[in-house]
Length: 141
Image (tube, rainbow, N blue to C red; front, side, top):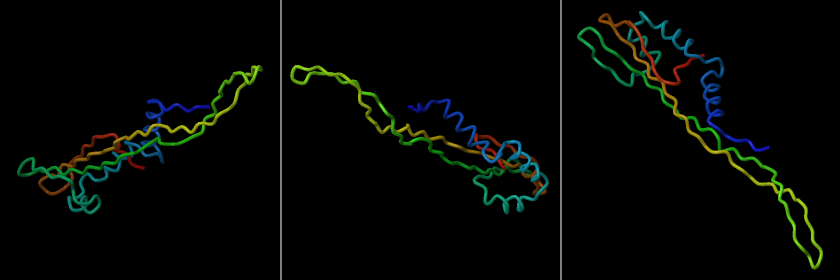
């Protein structure tokens, strides 16, 4: 049986990847909510040095974390049987029949870029006031 790789399989893969191990956006947002009211120092201790920092006003700033990865899918090889029909003549006798040939096939390789950008607003007292995230990989377990 030949396996055809389609965009539906790719979509299914992305759904499985983003929900594997019960990782969900809801759980990610719940973790972000626990950071509201925490100090900027505590945030940096937990998340590391931010990728970017923006000064919104004299009293507020935003710090941003970006996570990127690429998932490769495909490139698998499999053997597919194919029936070959043959006929001809040997001397004055005709013949016909089938043979099975085994052909090695390879599925196409697809790359999917995953990312999550999370920003935190830090208030004038140095506490996390709010957060915002965007991307296709903002999930947590």
